[in-house]
Amino acid sequence: MSTITLGDVEISRVTEWHGPFAPTSILFPTLSRDHWQANSSWLSPDHWDPATDMYLARTQSWVLRSEGRIILVDTGIGDDKQRQVPAFHHLRTGFLDRLAAAGVRPEDVDLVVNTHAHADHVGWNTRLHNGEWIPTFPNAQYLLSTPEDTFANPVNNIPRRAPFGGPDRDDAQIHLDSIAPLQHTGQLSTWDGPTHQIDANLTLELAPGHTPGSAVLRLASGTDRALFIGDIAHTPLQLIEPDHEPCLSEDEPAAIATRRRLLAEAADTNALIIPAHFGGSGAAEVTRDGSKFAITGWAAFSK
Figure 1: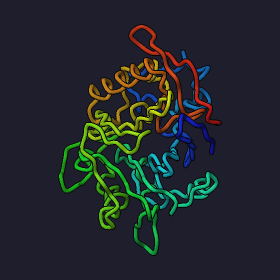
Figure 2: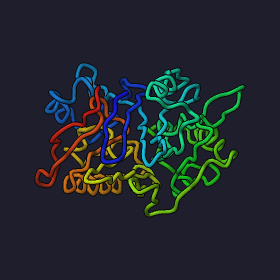
Figure 3: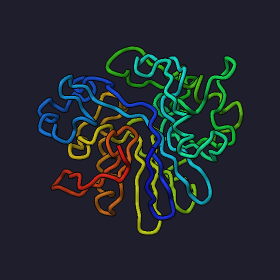
Figure 4: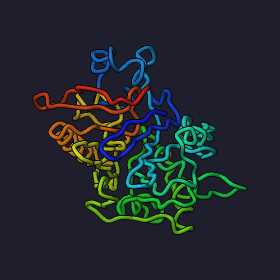
């Protein structure tokens, strides 16, 4: 766990899991081995393993203390969840212990923001108790965009892209164990776009592409700016090669356009880019580099 302060908002990073997820050749089919090798000096060892060509992912939650409330951004994979991806299946990660080390008990959380409804962003929405899935954060309101709620609900039978080109998806199970229990308790709130104001420091904004209802959390406090971008970028290589998209996104052209828009904003306003899955320092500052972008610094979060 590590903490920085931007304006009036304190931000802590709580890691759930860090390790190899998939070969880059499969996950990022348009990024050649040469792209990774040319940047190996800074991609390794936190973001890429050159010996195995494995993309290294981190699942983590961001704890924000803003205007007297504790806000949790994304909730990782979760324990005991049945998942098709082996790295996510039936985990026991000790996440709640690390959250406690950050000074947060489940009952302390006032608001949970899910940037989107993939398995590695909603897992700790719930926990297993006496064979039933119950909200992990009993006093919290959970926020999900209306387009994402519609997309995630299997009763709507919305076609979607298969991960890694394979036939199996966890969508129905994810909804059953990590979203539906919140609906049953009345804790799930959906918001209609294009924006949703949380408080004077924080605003949610639709950022479609990765999923139809993906959202970005915008922080503006004093002169400080940050963008919690969820899966708008999975690897820092996408910050300097923004036209490359992983095989996990539903609408690749829209995802690329969203990423370019947010990178341009970050470069022009000196906003910190805070993605969901970066290892290392976890967040970056960028500047324009012709039609692309360059990383000019990393956040003060410890590794």
